Image (cartoon, rainbow, N blue to C red; front, side, top):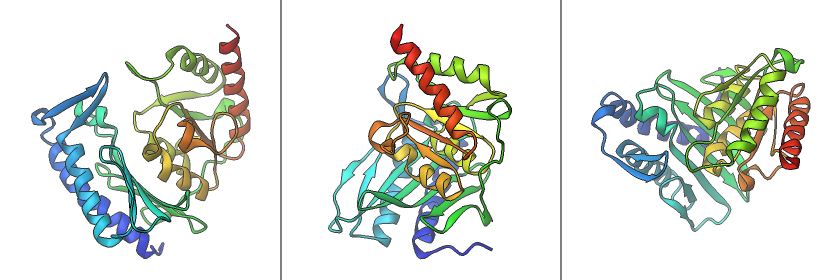
Length: 270
């Protein structure tokens, strides 16, 4: 059985407590009060309540740490070395449409490096977690990325830009290239879980543009600790800054990166 550290226990307990409220609200999704932030970008009462719960629970356990939260923004703590990156409801659109696929994502950053991550999917009670150097786990089972070697046999996850967000034509060029070269592409609508699925071997790879740090911080560490590779679309490691991410197993990452690079280059030339 996997042994969880005190840090992971704090993160998991906070996620479980916030999830109880999300599950209650998901059961009454049609009655939620929803405010509109912008085209296709919704904030629900459930989202705000979950973030408050996470802020209280994490703050109680580590009162000196800072925060970077989807709704609450940045809070500087007295400990300048540590910061929580929190997405209380990744997959808000799924949630509001009654689709049972959403997650809570929490990462811990130390001096700019992600050292712990938890992604919790409440509907199926799936906890994905990792600490730097200690491996990645699904509940209590060790995670490993898939072993597929050929892009043609691979199932790839992605995220599609929606109204008011992202460069749609740029994305469609990459989608067309990946569709033609793989066994399938899936768009699930939850970036954190897409990364967790790569770590679990459910996806062989995943790419997306224009994400936020709280969307991907925990998932980046979980994929790496499961033996996968994560870079930005240029092969660098500025994912949290650029919002562009490519994750895959060690066999698929390079050919997928080359495919995406060629598609982007072709789009820029047109």
